[in-house]
Length: 142
Image (tube, rainbow, N blue to C red; front, top):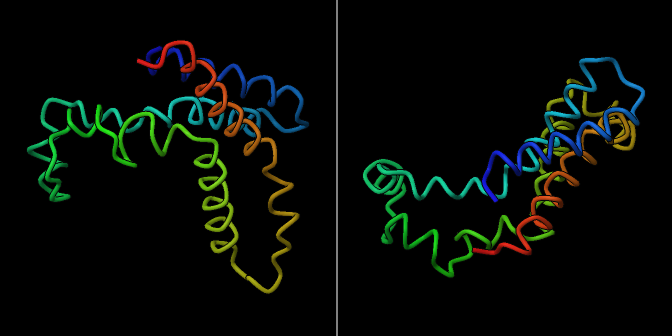
């Protein structure tokens, strides 16, 4: 499937979570956006196929392999590798939650369960958008 289909599936998943939530229209929009982002994120590594990847990003990062070799290769950062696992969305959500908690003005007053509970539907939409991407890729791995 292509990235547009995966993103639209994520938005659809996010819409379901948004309708379940009891949030304002802006909050529901954030939930839908998180679902779409979760649906698109596993294919982010496809930027290695861009026409000028080797001369721009590849040279800036000092990569020894071309973008096409990275995409089809068996590296941990290749396509269908790290970002196509169930561990990836969990680690991303933990990172976002840690940043969110860190950005809170007074860390002594932070109640971690309250912060996570406030954005639970955003996290669920992101995770299930990501999960549906992986499920959609199963019949069409190439």
